Image 1: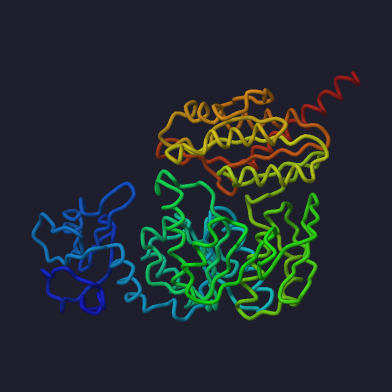
Image 2: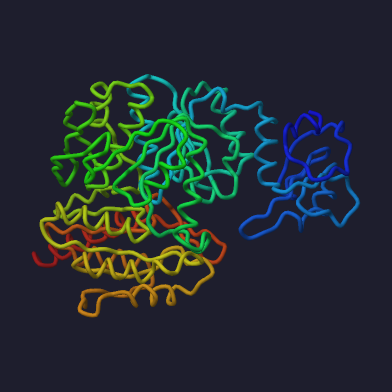
Length: 494
């Protein structure tokens, strides 16, 4: 492809290259550059591609797109925003795959993974279409899982993935759209059939700085959506609505002006039941995932499906067959008379939601094991400690992904938020030991929540990923407890 074809309508500041040169590929990572490729230098969260232009040249780059002139002799094009150029060039390189798909983007702090998976389930069950999914738990084409690095991939990988989904016959693609992806132009140039806003609570403030900046980043989705679905129980709903360019369908539990309302909510240990009120229709809904947040997730998914043209009476039955998402209010089988949940809750609001959900059906105590990630927003740590002390009966504060921070320092910041009148907590730095200790304390009717890791099967120490699965730790410890119990019974008989 010629360079001028690849650039299309990109805004250029200056050209020091032959626009008629042939380009063999695109790269934004100097380590992957091959002979004849265009290297686009982007500024990342931790590194700056401009520092690796010389490496890209050595690896075969024939031209550079950059925001500042390179220090080495090589054809280059100067632009104002190389991230947007990477996105635009990637669209051209892969032949605009999104034009052959119906995209649904879901943004918000909590619920993105559950809502995207629920929409995918509804569409597949209702239409028989093959649906692609891009999100935290993985990328999927139908039921086939593909590897993933970020909640929303970099723009080049995004276009490559969409192209693959077109080739494999997808009609819809449902994707989580993170604030990072919006702010860093990873989804620049995409137009969505529907944009969905779930909620906004403090998260990623280490990156965005303020809640206002975080909200503004989320709102970048909606000018690029033909229609929008907005949770108007959330205080940031008005901002999202103001940025929406097409029809908006609202949903809520507490706001009677919403287009779709959840009422008469019945919370059970293994499901939620509620009524939806919408445009003169009243329907009874059942979703086999516990918690009030499951009502919100259901409403968002139902509203999206209705905006896509599906009959609400036909799609509601599909919710009963939904099996949930790994690591989201996931019940770990124990065969014992207490409940163990693994949940991805790693924000104050998410932790509050999962503890509250457990409180609604617990016959006895609610016990929580959690930590906070290192090198991430520190402001949420004492808030999560406060929530655990206010809502749980017993808490164990432990490690999560410590990254480059000392786990003890992270734990101390969590503990600083614990209510002084709350003494029913332990600090156990080893996550394995914390989980095992929690299991040893459980009584009949208790609910144990192991929060923060969810679907993840690793812990990050420094820059190294070490295999660790909360579910496996539970299973191994319960097996050991059974062995000890059998041995004790044999000794008692002797």
